[in-house]
Image (cartoon, rainbow, N blue to C red; front, side, top):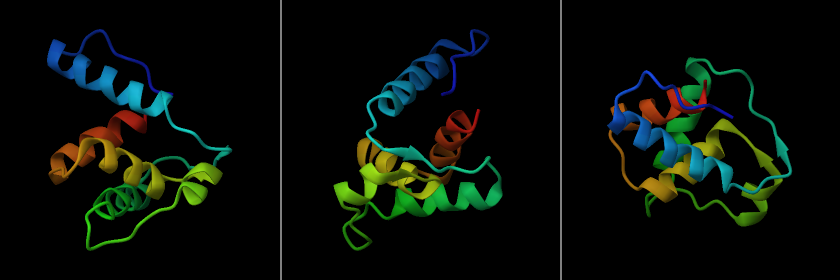
Length: 97
């Protein structure tokens, strides 16, 4: 799990504390995420965007079985709502630490 960096400005620290809280509340049996790279970043973004009503619905059975970059994006998108590409990338970068 990522840790808070004390050199970050207060607003960034506040966001990171919130991201860390969301992550700590996740339920899953196995973390199947591979090391972060651009392909995993894309999967995270796809998962986040799948939260919108016209996209895909992830079941609790799916989410609770295995943690992937895709369903991690979905979980954060469900908690944080629509996000700009910049916001999604900031969350991914924090989780990829």
